[in-house]
Structure formats: C-alpha cells, structure tokens
Length: 626
Image 1: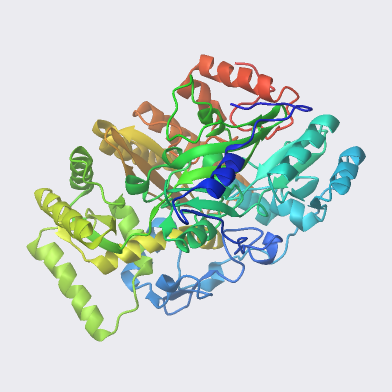
Image 2: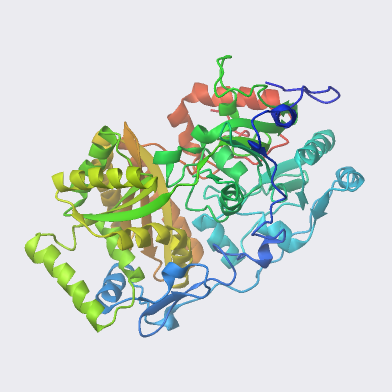
C-alpha cells in the first residue's frame, strides 16, 4: 500500500499504470477512455432534488378523493394509473388511521426551508488556500443545508420542523483526485474538519454535524468527480471516479456494452464512493455481488497520505487486505477518489417473475432451498403479508373486465388453492443473462416453488413489484404528510433463525406500541438478499402520531426502534446488513465487533488521522471511552 505523506513523491498509481499499459497493448481497443460524464443531478442539487424529502422536486405522490393514485412526474411510469380500492382504503384506515381519500388530513412539507441557518465558522487561511488552488466552493445557506443531513426519519422530521442545529460551514467541489489531495492537505495544515458527501442518501445520521464542533466544517462534495476514466474489456474492469451516481454509472458503462450490476434501492441518487464507504449491497447481488465483491482497487486520500495497492492482479496475498479498512469506514478516515470495479456484459435478456405462497414460513423455506441449491436468480425477494397488503395501493386502475379477472384470480387463490388473503406472501424474482440460461433458471425456480405450494403469479406482477422499490421512499414521505411516521431497518440472520426473528420483532414492536397507547401501527418485513448461510431481512415500521407533535412522536418512534433492534440481536441478527452504522447505531458496535475490535479501529484512526480531520463522528464516538 502507498501511504506516502506530505513532501514525498508517491509511486505511480494503478490508474496511471493502466493508462500506460493501454498505450502498449496489442489487444486492439480493449481499453476505452470515455468522454466526460454528463451528470443527471446538477451541481446545485437542490434545484432538482427536494430539500426536505426523498427524490426529485417535481415528483410527489398524490391520491385523489376517488382513490386514483399517481406521481406528479413521468419519471416513474409504473406509478401511473393506480387506484386505491375501498378494501385497501379501509385496511389502511384501520391499521394506520390514514385515509388516502381525504386530503384534508394532510400537512405537506413547506416548499422552502422554514429555518434560520447559522452563520458559518470561517478559517481564513483554509479559504485562501481554496482560492489559490482555484477549487470551487460555496458558503450559501441552501448549499450548506442540503449537505448537512441524510434521509433518516430523524433527518426529515427535523428538516420539516426547522430543528437543524449545525450544518457545514462551506461546501467544496473537487474536480479530480489531485484536488482532493490539496483540500485534505489544507484541512490538515489549518485544522479544519472534512465530512465527505456523495449522494446524501444515508439513513444512519452519517452527515449530522456535531453542534459542539468549534472548527470549520467542510462538506467535500464528490459529485463533480463523476467520470468513467477507462473501461478495460479484456479484463472486464472499469476505473471510475467516486462521485458518479448509480444511474449515471450504468448509463455510461452500457455505452461500452458492460454494466456493474450494482443496483441498491437508492441507485438513482447514491454514489460509487458512498457504496464503498458503507459496504453497500444491491438488489441483484446474487448475480453481481455486494460492493466488496465488485471492488478491485481503491484510491484513498487521508491526512497521512494516499493509500492504494500497487497491483493490477485480481488477487494478492500480501498480509491483511487494507481495502477492508476503507470499505465501511463511513468517511471517518479519508476520501475515496477512484475505484476500479469488475464489470459484466450487458445481459441479453432481463425477465421477471412472481410467485404466491400460502404463508410466510413456506416462502422462507423456498428461499432457503434456492440458496442450498445455489439456484439464485439475479434478485429474489420475499414479501410478507403485511407488505403485500400495503402494496395493494399500487394496483393498476382496472376497467370492468380487469376487475372481473382480478376477482377470478382471488377466487382461485381462496377457494381452490386454499390461500387466506391475510396470510399469503409473495416472491419477486429477476433473471438476467442469455436467453437459454434465463429459461433454464426460470424452469428450475418454478419446480422449487411447487415443492412449497407456490403458484406462478406472472411476470408483470414481478416487474411491477421490483420497479416499485424505487418509489418506496416517496411513499414514506407521503405517509408523514398524513401524520404517519415510517422507517425501515435491516439485518442479516442465519437461515434457522430467519422466520423466528421476523415473528419476534413484529411481536416486540406491537407490544411496545400497546404499552405507549399507540393504537394505529403496522410492521412488515421482506427477505431481500439470499446467502448460503442466511439472509438479509428488511423491516418497515409505521405508526400514526395521533395527538403527539412531530418531535414527541419521533422520540417515541426512536425508542421503539431501539427496543426492536435489541430484539433483532437477541434473535441472532446483527445491527446492519448494508446501511452501515453512522451515529444512529453506534451503541451496538462494541457488542457486534467486540471491544477489542473497536480499539483496533481507534488505533487505525490514530495512525491515519491523528488530529481527527475526518470528524464525522460515525462508527465510534471518539469523545467517549469503552
């Protein structure tokens, strides 16, 4: 690893080695240098994205008094022409006291921030350095506010109610790796705090600034470092700058006949560097791997120098793999500037499927069977009954013949197959590859479903179920408008404890709600990623705040979620499968990795960043002792 500090000439980086190799190769045009990426999201993010919620400014969820449901832009065609029928309306009213037909119960978020942003702390010497190096920056309040939060329920409620104690003092936009080196050197020299910013989609309070920090806080926004530097089709790798967001990455790679396949729920807005720094996972990890499986090489700027391997090989045995210090470091040690990832050919075929099972245990057993036989398609998700019922708000608006056909299908499920609507669950599958492989996979999966009383529910339902994932966060924000607080949390768990963990956590949340007098609440779950030894489980927990104001309701929500996480761990789960720790889950880290593990992290932090320049406060509270 190159950890050369200030005043020393570093060895040539892997990026430069590859560039030289591309001039000498005899393998034709295997190495491609694309043109500069055109960013989907502008530099001034708030001109396109909401300041107090998820996604695009022009996109909100609307339900008309007649039950017609739609989004206000054409970005999500799967959300056109939906209808909330009376049975779904009554179910939501019973469970969450939320009447989608009655707009009078809604309180929309303010269009513009309703808070006063504190004046920035300014380190004049640092600012002179930025000007000397001609590095773009802003001290405007809206730029600072946008980069002072993520997308936890806490973040959104605090934004809507004007309770943000501290935001970054300046936003800087480096244009390349060398700019980042200059910024980090300046911050180290002048004792300025840096908080790296990628897409801002975290759900861990990772971007929350310490109100007690006396130093200037810099938000280092990597969004202008968004190039695909090269694509090597001989070795099926690509070198990309860390600020490129998921949708831009796949668009640019596909121009050259390849993709990364990494598709988290946040793919539209989250960045490659953010994926690495949180050890992210995507919906198609079965085929393409988690981010740690995709990463070949990382270029990492720290206060003590640049850290990167000097190797082009696919694997190296040279002691501990220090990439794994960078993976999951959550902005506490340095800035990821460039990443070499594995790529795959654009699949010839992409197909969807869905299957219905009589109850959740059958679905879990089916997922376990698929894992045991190593038959996973690109994506496989099991949705429990509560989430299935909630998902009925997305049903297409049906004409008279469509309604009759829908009734026939439900009649078959209930009266002939013997499925109860309040128990059934659904599996959504995505298949990718060449036509023959996809057909073979689908046939094999179909046979496994029959073993567990599964019924084929069609490819259209599968496609709808998969693509709706990208609109869930919009629905969460709409729920807040109706007075319902909702959030997700996830874990991974061994197979033999999966179904019990799901039951126990739901029961725990129900008990805690009852103890607090909360009468309208719902908890659902889904199994989203499948492994040999276990699975990832997502929980969605919501309750109506009733007569509580938002701050009181948020406090109660956080208390219940904390008890639920304790139950997750008691049942054999862990604190996070892919969201990370941030500041929201710090209390469980010593239990998860051992006190010795935390001390090892502290030692690495002391060596790499002795003055705590990267003082985001994530992972471990350095002010406290174990």
